[in-house]
Image: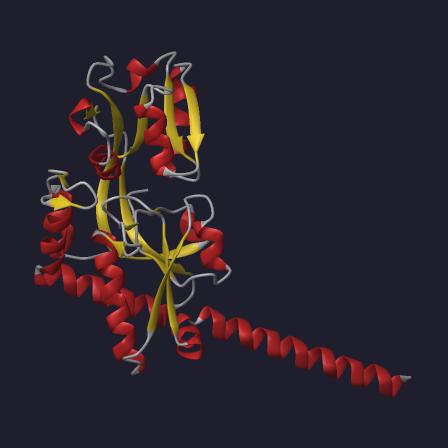
Amino acid sequence: MKKMTIALVAVVSIMLATTAGLWAQDNDTLEKIKRSGKFTVGVVPALPFSYFDDYGTVIGYSTYYSHLIAESIKKELNMPGLTVEYIEVNAGNRIPKLVTGDYDIECGSTTNNIARQSEVAFSNTIFVVGTRLLTHKESGINDIPDLQGRKVAVTKGTTTESLINLINSAEKLNIEIISTNEFREAFLKLESGQVDAFFLDDAILAGERAGAVNPSDWVIVGPSQSYETYGCMIRKDDPRFKKLVDDAVALAQTSGEAEKAFNRWFKSPVPPTGTNLNFDMPDVMRNLFRAPNDEPYQ
């Protein structure tokens, strides 16, 4: 009996060690990519950051960075034939799916903040936004207080959802907050008259407006309620992969190439409608490009 117990303990120990080893390997993204021969990028569709065109190809400003990172991985691992795969996720499941290894990175419009850093890590910042309102030009809404007793759309799992709830409670505005799963779903509620405004990051609002039936009917209004930084989201405790990602982002920004990408997606006509967002680069982003960093605003 004693021999059997010792043998059982030995088997369990080996199993635990093996499991721990596999977890350590899976938490090393570059090792995971090397074993699988595949680099998987999560996409939360948001024009013009990262979205699918009419042919199913992922395009956009943030996708520019994921392409650079893929090229860096190919060089680092000496894998010129590396497969790059894009999978769609949403604001609600993007973090759990990253943590469980369903994909390796998300370069889109995800805010880097202290709360999220308990679950995931972020690259150097790729974009800085302010949170504002999108509404009809004749709605009479110019700022958050004008929403009193009215309806506003937000997207589940976003920092703006938390923020509008806090403002609503603190200011006793009696706003009816409608949470949706997707950015496009929220805008369609606005466009169809189901809500009076859409509260989100101004650059994404500009992208949603560009896809409207009549873009000129919609205006982005009010002062920014907060400033937020977007980064490429990766798994925690993976310094080797984070350095590779940060280096790729920093080189693009300090060389001037990232500004060209910005102008391509925010100052020129973009698919699918050929609308120009006419979104000027904020001064905080110009400063960022001179000195790349991964610091959040909150």
